[in-house]
Length: 166
Image 1 (cartoon, rainbow, N blue to C red):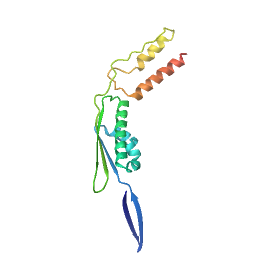
Image 2: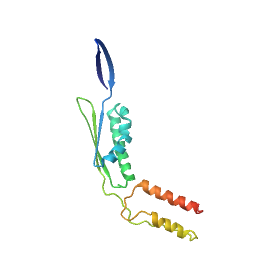
Image 3: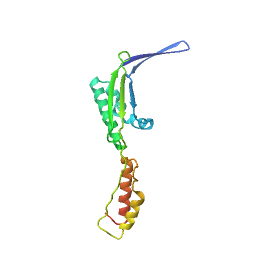
Image 4: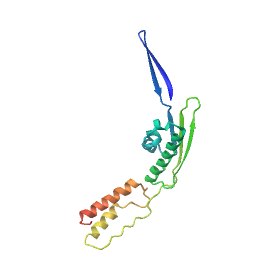
């Protein structure tokens, strides 16, 4: 840790404070929209546990790689199943600050091509359920996200329960 001395002078009174200042970590993520970066960056392990990371270079590398995997998991939730993330780590020899650069290649986003939901067995409510499905199913070409998929699934299950299924 770098020691910083802060000296304040108030009307001839000299006050000295001795502060310990952690070496900063500079995190740079490129290849993603800024809104996504702003959403995920504070959640990365390297950002949440930066004080732990300074204990050793090994811990810094471990958290940087864990954060790389967290970025990939985040991208999969958004429909980017072929995403790759390269991480480059360097330390400024003078300031001892760390630079962690993540280069993201999102790859193609998964879109819906067709959604087939088969209803068995045939009951009196099949037409009501089929009508619901026809009006709520994702349209061909819509982007896939796990949140939207889960929402649609839960809504369908709730509708089926309201009709006496399950």
